[in-house]
Image (cartoon, rainbow, N blue to C red; front, side, top):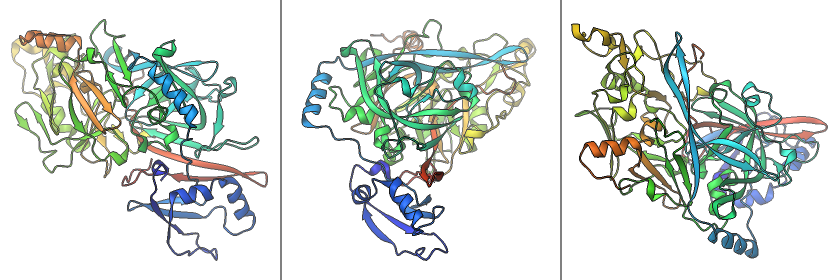
Length: 567
């Protein structure tokens, strides 16, 4: 509901209080704008109604949005609109934006953490993180820029989770520009507890409270830095996996704003409304795992960096924009010369997610992909250079192709050693216990080895894929296009036109491949899982208020229009 509060639309509210005399209210329709104006003092109204016994504090209600019905406590809050700047402030912001050099480039560092099995490194966990600062004076953090989630999330100084203690934390009291807020943007008054949110990702979850502060990224000078006031999440709990394993501190969500709990929580939405002088785009360049390229990746804000392209951009539209994901329709999937059946019914889509380390495939088809892409290997062999089939994704207006150099794990997997996750990305991922997929041994995927290749039968070269098991309407035939694809293609995310551009990235691997093709180039836990996905799958907000000296709570699940997933 809140995600649509910027435009006038209606929703149906029906009380289901139960035995209370006012429990059966007739359905009626009201404008979001009217509700927002009437309910701006939600804490006061909730306390008064409860105190007068006009409504019980524990009652529940349901609302229908776009045909989807969700349960919600009677203490629900309607999010406020983004603050409207005065003409003078807007003119000042526009002048400041025009003086900057766009796009602003933020370097990303690739981190690789070894995964140990039986005393040997069998795989690596990888992430790409860049620097941001928050508040005055600035507090510095390293974050994953994630197109699969919507919020800026950093550990709170009040967090005592093991993962929080391993990283830099945000101290709201140390920032003169900070304000503790509720989910609707209202200030948390002295003596009150602020609202809380639980965000479930493809792997892991955080519990946090809300703050509004200035968030900056880019260089040290005004010309190379972008700053904007944005509502964000201060994590008071963070799961051990995957957060403890990496050096990055938090997550910088860059999804479409429909995935956020409100427009004020979307950094790019706030930047777009600030009168900045750049284009409503950002571009992502991932250099991949080649040696010496750890510091070569970047994100471009306010446009894209054409120097990172080896081919012109080709555009494809965002599918189901109202869900908030950068997702696209996949018309066909081919492995080698074979077209797979998974997309024949026209239901396949792919979420382009910079926060996912693997290539996600529909869970029902994981075995087919494993068998088609796995081949025999040898100890200490670089599997990215083995003879294996290519994989193609046919989109609207473009075909994307991946070879073994893109999708293979670099290290061969010993027979009997299991890597990967049987669960992958699910609605339960936030508390999942990692389980292995079928063994990546050669015997389960290839024929018998010949005598002169006996040394290869004990190892297999396996793809970096993971199962995606999400229900409709986002699933079930959902792909997550993570690092294997994004290290081959430079991607540009067009906020205004709701489209994604793909161009061959100017990586070392792509340049070498073009030269070989004769084309010119112009420019440690045994149960630990090496996959991670920060694709946002659930968001639950707890509204908290005081009543006669007692803290009352109401929990509700926000759901984007037309999306059955709790978020």
